[in-house]
Image 1 (cartoon, rainbow, N blue to C red):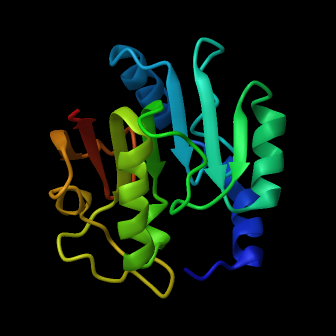
Image 2: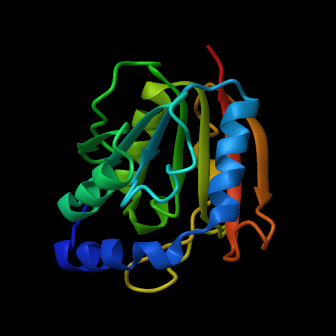
Length: 185
């Protein structure tokens, strides 16, 4: 997996302009309705998708970008943030109720994605959510980003596919597929 520090520093600085209150409310309401108390965002950046979770949740975020993690720690002082990548998550097996990604997996090469899916499954206790730019055949969007078909990626795991639908444009204006999985014990 190649990592472009300058690209991701700039992305972190511009992240506030990408804040989508509708999406963050949707995630918070979903986690609450599923009776989840521990939350992990992989590729959390500055933590904009974690900010609506209140102190009743145990909030975790993982990212590779130091600058983004500094901003996340400042914005969410009760959260726990780790500099790590998706292929080596610093959590025990089945230790987090609700593990999610939001337009991270589109940036990963296929090997990193496959290893990351395995890690998400390992650390998830109850639910996994992927909200990614969707394409059935996973073709390239540009030099940096690839469409993903996450339902296909989960077929060999012990999960129940609860939902696999395009998000409504009022919640997420890009072509994002919402995939919700229940881990089967």
